[in-house]
Amino acid sequence: MAMCYVTCIVAGVRTYAQVPRFLKAKVKELLISMELEELVVE
Image (tube, rainbow, N blue to C red; front, side, top):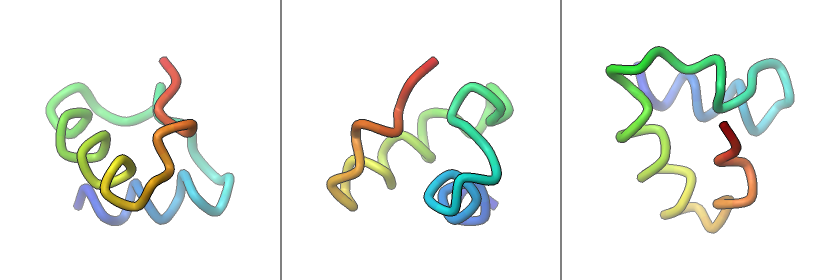
């Protein structure tokens, strides 16, 4: 499920702020591992 949000964030459909609280840590970890930490904005 976290990867679905990562895909949406990268595509510009969603923002990190729209990620459910229980998934934020995993989504943040995935974005950082993809060197996309600039997309981790509250």
